[in-house]
Image (cartoon, rainbow, N blue to C red):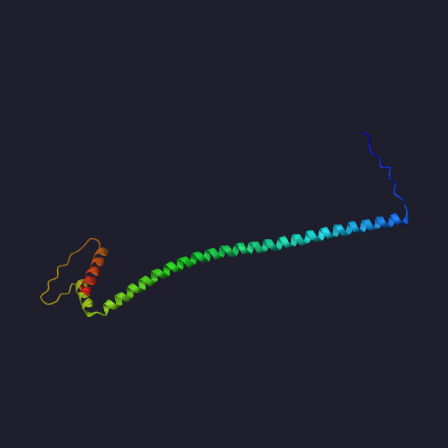
Length: 141
């Protein structure tokens, strides 16, 4: 193939100079618009990135707060159960027969004509539970 040679010559007239100047002005405006659009898009990208990071952090914080809420709820249920148990203990302590039986079982007191035989157990927590069960069953009678 033969080389293409530029056989087109530019006319050096006022009209061509004017059109060439207009073309260069349009090209500069086009470059300016593209740069402006690029800057706007870059700014929007930065803003959306910052907002996205903040949303991500807020979601993590919300998850932590939800976990704390679950823990607080379970702790509140335990505390309510303890409070109800303590209220029932207080109501039992208002009963004179229960207090008398509790004092006799705990401090080995006895009524007249009653004999006390202390039995030592290896597990003190089970004896406490048995005492509580025996006192609650006697108060229920």
